[in-house]
Amino acid sequence: MDPMYLMNNVWIMFAFILVILMQGGFILLEAGSTRMKNAGHVAGKTVFTLGIASIVFWAVGYGFIYGSSAGGFLGVSDFFFGDFTTEVDGLAGSVDFIFQLAFAAIALTIAFGGFAERAKISVYLIFAVLFSAFVYPFVAHWIWGAGWIGELGKQDFAGSTVVHLTGAMAALAATILLRPRLGKFNKDGSANDLAGHNQVYTALGVLILWVGWFGFNAGSTLGVDDAFFGYVALNTQLGAAAGAIAALLIAWAVLGKSDVPTMLNGALAGLVAITASCAFVAPWAAVIIGLIGGLIVFFSMKFFEKNKIDDPIFALSVHGVAGVWGTLSTGFFATPALAEMNGGQAGLFYGGGFEQLGVQTISVVACGLFAFIASYVLLKVTGALTGGLRVSEEEELMGLDMSEHGSYGYPESLSGTSVTSEDRRGA
Image (cartoon, rainbow, N blue to C red; front, side, top):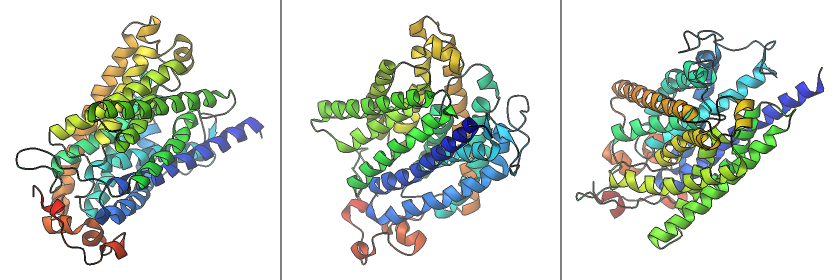
């Protein structure tokens, strides 16, 4: 057997492990960013929804994305994947399958950021099935599975649109339908800070995500034969670094304090932004893309809060707004050589005109609208099946650890806990 074929498969299996490890990063990020009474719930739902995403992707998701295309809209073959003899993109079919599965699971985890601290566990279960079958696969097929947007020459190397924007639009639909958490907003419209219980968890979660992102982006080269994965990793590192620095400095300048959560979200925004463009741009452009991602995430977080949109994990800003910027950025910065190598046209700043920027804009609008509308409708269906999306006021005040699971994630700290004044504010 060809040694290079084996090396490519080993690399992608390792990349799959890195991307799955990102789920651990999300557990720490989300648990640390929410209150102690919901920490066990946040951690547990991440694990069981990963299980649901995996089964649904095996049954229908992979086929809808990579099966024979029906008019560029949806795949219609390869369901219940299990043919170990196939070869896809120079990889064993099973290796390609497991790698793509990890991306679908990440999109679902991003979507669930908009549900935090107020959704029923039954809602997570049902919507996980619906999103994994009928939302993510459509967008992924359009761009990565011989769909109509991919045919236009869309540049989205590792998923700023496919994974991050799709997940964020589902989170937006959930945030609107679930309404703000009790105590988040006062009657005069001012916001209270329902701070997460553990910044150390949040920081460690971001670092794990940062490491996992090298599987996400560099793994999307699907091989090691030309060592291009190293270039992709370099751009990924520069984008994340610039995002972290920019977010910390803008928070310091505006707030007078170097806010840690803002800095952490800036690092993630830089990672999200560079995800689409990491294979298309020069390193100096990766720094600019990450820097702008770090700046816009700060102002986006303020915008959503001002408009009474309660986004506890900041999924809309980190994955949505930064995902849009990352998608558009290739339309400005894609170099001629890298565009020729990886698809599409050179960006505006390299004499490519507005053609690639136009394609990127079409993809953002089409995929964003579809993901939001489809998720909104499916959440309405989910609410009808579960008697409503949200837990009762009493259950929310108690905390979802106890009301949904019967035990606290921190039993020694919270046994006998009563409702705090913070919980009652604005209720």
